[in-house]
Length: 368
Ligand SMILES: [Zn+2]
Image (cartoon, rainbow, N blue to C red):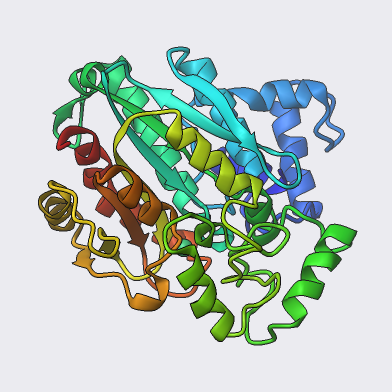
């Protein structure tokens, strides 16, 4: 929330400090300037009337929709979804289920074509930069649709009529809140997660956290070689709740994994993309399953992004969402690993990541 305010005030040229989530004296002064400019009570507090004056920036009416230079928490996601819905009422928003902490896991539907595809992100907590990638794509698609423009060279209106895209931008909201700093270090929730992390001193906390809030890796929860995933991860020492790589006590024990699983079963997706970070790589296979169009579409994804199309390393080739999708439907499913470096990737990589992936996101809805 504070980061969001800092971002708006930087955008308005009123604040020149860091985006650090701290409500310090410089930020308070900037807020007071904003309040004076808007003839509000200049008390340096975001009360209801100040909030009302800030809203146009949040709602995108003044050119500011998806912030891509701040820690993208679940809170910001919710604000952005509401803003997009206000601006673009044709979007359909629903909840696919609730997280361990009771946060709704939202899905946005855009388009009215018979063909359905599904894009998801942030199943791993410290890979949250993938959420604003999908949200910015959604915002750009809405904008080009309303203004009858092209997106990645394709008519947005034609895309809208032929394909329905479902977007689940944050499968693991609790984990993302932990990594983005939304959960206070003074809370018992934070302390409890830290106790889990303490058993893995080589994994930094909270930055190394990939799991859901109770220490289960949501992308090792699917009925596609789950026992083999369990064998591999147990042999690596992940036998109890962990910041990453704990498969859980069985497939689909976690509400977040179950939510995306059930959501998928309720639809007829011809193709899925699941977004992760690390390596600029596209994984397209599961064991011996080779859906007809997987290689040719994957090759085109590789061409437009510059990412390499690769075989999944054996030790991470079981029980993932895309593994299950391919096994269950024999249709194209892809894990897209964006960016390079240490997770969570710095927001300075956002523009490059978005540029690399826009083609994939558009072609995913066209090629199939
Ligand atoms: Zn991942």
